Image (tube, rainbow, N blue to C red):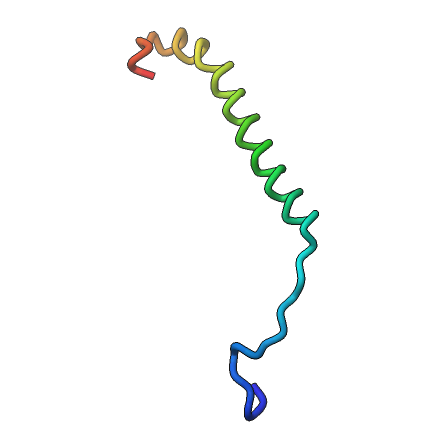
Length: 56
């Protein structure tokens, strides 16, 4: 750091709100798809492992 400046004086980089929104929507989509895949696979997992519903 140059003399006379502190870390709080560092310039901030602006992030476009659209980029933040796209990242949040992508993360939510991944969670929803993952949840759907697990729910579709549960009956097969239960049958293959001979598990009870409470055992899953």
